Length: 120
Image 1 (cartoon, one colour):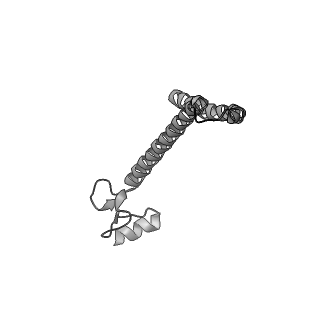
Image 2 (cartoon, helix red, strand yellow; image 1 turned 45 degrees about the vertical axis):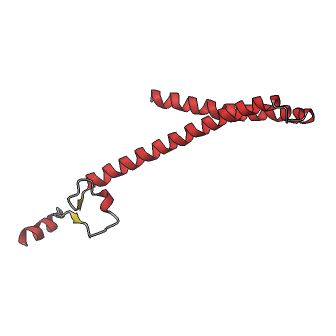
Image 3 (cartoon, one colour; image 1 turned 180 degrees about the vertical axis):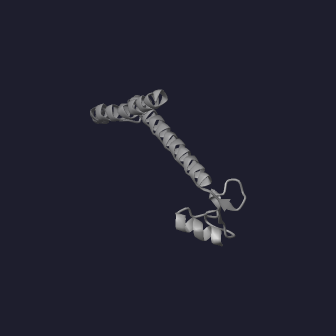
């Protein structure tokens, strides 16, 4: 008791680790399963969460690039199908410039960002 009072007076407070209550929402931070959450475990959990979010973002960007490439291919082949009337081909041609420009920019940005991050 006297030692802890002296430590508090000197400004060095001795802290005991926080024990978790049963079914605590912070139990996911306890990586080693000892029932105690340390700063290192919280930091490690935060790093793992950031890594998972970065992977999800990369997967989403990859899917967007694939959808853009597939939509450009489908739009390029669309006028070749017999069920498209010739009167609509002019409309398809006028829309194709903007569609290809926007979809190609999505694909180009994805590949550029991927190459940039690989160098970094």
